[in-house]
Length: 453
Ligand code: SF4
Image (cartoon, rainbow, N blue to C red):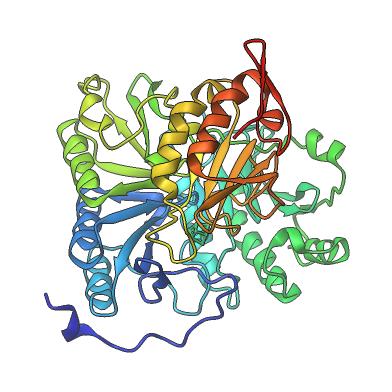
C-alpha cells in the first residue's frame, strides 16, 4: 500500500510538554516519526504482534522500543507512511482510543493480571472499567496513570493513582504525593471505577499535570468529592502509609527475565529487550515461538520486555531460540544498564549510546552483580531513566560526563571518551565508583600509584 495515497495533514500540534505520541499524532525524533502503540491491558494477540512487526517493517525502520508503561513504539515512520501505519494497526484493534489529547492507555496492570492465583479481585475487569470511566473525563493530562494491583499487600509501581486489593476485602484507592502514596478511600470493588472517575475529574480541576504535584489542601479537596457512602481517609505521613500496607517496588509488575512456574497450570517466561529495544523480525520470531508453545498472547512488561504464559507441557527449555534477541536470564549484565536511543537515531545525542551501553555492560558485570546500576544517556534529558543511578554517563559533544550517584541533569564529575570510561569502570570494582571517576585522584594499583586517564 502506498503511504502517499493516505497522506493527510497532522492534527493540530499539541503542546510538547506532556505530549504522548499515538498513532494519529506520532512524534518527530532523530530517525523520523515515532508512533506509540497502546495495546489494551498491555496484551497483544499473536496476530496483533505480527501486525505491529509488519507495520514497523513496512512503514517504519524496523526498530521497536518497549516502554516502562508496557507500550510499544514504532520508530522511523515518515509523513508518507504514518497514515498507512495507523490504518493497519487500527484494523488490528490497536488504534488510538481518544482524540482529545488525553491518555491513550490510562491503566497499568501486572503482566500476570487475570492469571495470577494470588489475585483476589478481577484485575482485567477492573482495569477495563477504569479505562472506560477515564474516557469520560475530559482534560485528563496525557500521562495520567492508574495502576491496578490484585495481590493484597503487594508492592505497587509508581503511578498517579493506585487501586489495590485490600486484605480485609474490597479495594483501596491511593494517590501519589510528594511524600509517597496516600490512601484516600476504601470501597467495594464494583464501586471503584465510579470513585476513580470522581477522583480524576477533581484532579483535572486542580490544573496539575501530575498527581504528586497536588498540594495538601487540594488533596483534602479531592477526598471531599468522593462519594459520601465510602470511608474517606486522608493520611499524610509515612507511618500511616506503612500501616495501610502500601509499599513501592518493582515486583510483580516487572518480573525479571527468566522462567518460573506460577501455578500448576502454567509457566511464566519473562524476556527483556536489551536496553528496551528490539526489531520487527525479533517480534515476529517471538510470535512464532509463542505459537509453537501454545501461548495465545504476548504480554508486555514494564520491565521493557515481554511475558509469555505457557501451559505446563510446553517445551520451555528451548530458550536459545530467543537469546539472540532478548535477555532470557536474570544474571545478564545488560539488566544493570539503562540506555536511551542516542545517536544517530536521536538528533539530541552525540554518542552511540546503545553500542556504548553494550560495551559498558560487560565491564560493569561485577558491579551489576552487587546490585549497582548504570545509565548511558545521550543527553541530559535522561529519557531512559530520569532518576539517579550509581553511575550515569551523559553524552555531550562526543564525550560522556560521569555523574556518580546522581541523575542525568546533575553536574558531572568529569568528561571522558568512552574508552576512558570503560577503563575507569574496570577499576571501580576495586576502588569504588567515586574514586575511579574523581578528576584528580591518584589510584593505587598493585603497589603503584597512577593517575586515571
Ligand atoms: S536522552 Fe537525549 S539523546 Fe537520549 S533519547 Fe532522550 S533526547 Fe535523545
